[in-house]
Amino acid sequence: MKAARHAAASACVLLATAAQGCELVLREHRSERVLQRIALPEPGVRIAFEHSVLGTTVIDRYVFRPHAVLVEEQFDGSGYGLPHAAAPGERLTHDSNGSRLELERVVQPLVVRPLPAQGMRLLLSSGPLLLSELTTLAIELRAVGCAPGDEP
Image 1 (tube, helix red, strand yellow):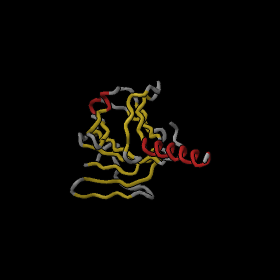
Image 2: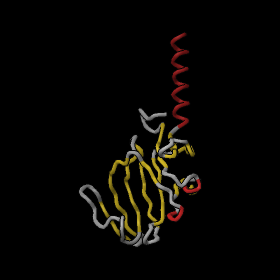
Image 3: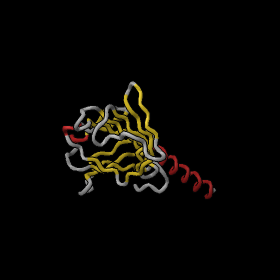
Image 4: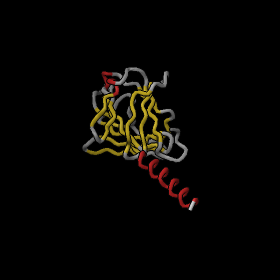
């Protein structure tokens, strides 16, 4: 009987942990002050910003494994900071919607500087979150609860 209660309690803890799911924590990079916590339906995020020279939108897609991995960059045009060729193991394609670079680049830590002129924003299912409204200081994006061993 005691073992059955223990097993049931363990199952409840596991279900509660699974229900919490993956969460994106945004912190000021230097102070580590938490700015916002966002539930993620999947362990990934898309960050959009306006290219400082071209004025076109760039969208970077990251997945957390548990570290952030840049897996895709979508952009239009060519210019400073934009890829013009694929490196070994990457794939660059072009079509009427622009260019897409597929890659696997670990970015640890994932830190962005939300300059207001670039309109850096998270593209969430609930709508975009403009990062410069949280702070203009560097922001670290960290996913927690997405994979075994993630820090809380």
